[in-house]
Length: 287
Image 1 (tube, rainbow, N blue to C red):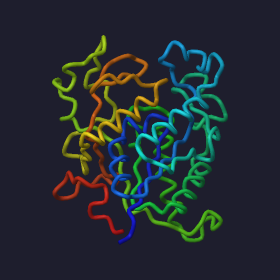
Image 2 (image 1 turned 90 degrees about the horizontal axis):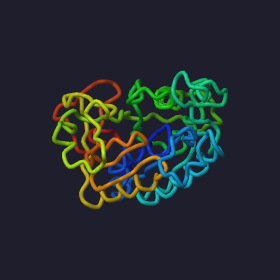
Image 3 (image 1 turned 180 degrees about the vertical axis):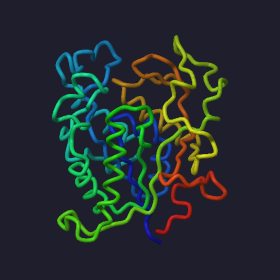
Image 4 (image 1 turned 30 degrees about the horizontal axis):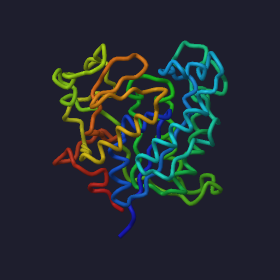
């Protein structure tokens, strides 16, 4: 039987655990090859613990290397042994938000030509040969420039990796069979989803990124107790960015939102297969 191979493409450390922690832990446990590519070290993130405030970009600017360590621990919790930064750690800097000074830096991910970064990712695709790739939708879930750029780079890399004659030094061509975008089904964030929030303030449905109508969801991956615990542990590892409290978590805005143990995906081509949602990212995929 052909091994199942799965590639996740994310913008910053912590995005993978929030969006895909259950999914990654499940497929590792099932013996699939799981690879994570992270595009930046997240240097511009806001630091939650006061004792680590000196790491911030406007202080010592050492948050990036620190988050490399957080990501390594998160991947240990999920069992993922193949995790790498696009072009190597620090090749592309976190871009911050549109209109901010970090977004003007020539070394930020947002400013790099898409094809340059896509060639680096195409080399990973040709090396690892995934049948399935997971990344963001065109808006990056909530409009962050690095998320949008990760979507663009991943989309282009899938095209370039499959081209005969394109940059043979990148490896033999490989066709990714299916591309998914992270999403949250609207039914997951109804008003009762925020009941029992232990944080001082609660997020609302409009604060959750990537929400789509349930009819668009192609796959739902639901965690059992062990998978959910692994996701929670991975998110706790990103302590500069996330505070976890029971079944809820908060980012630097301190708004509590549910820690979802069901992770949803929609197809990049916009289709919704008959019988959706499936319970497997590889359902119907030609291995």
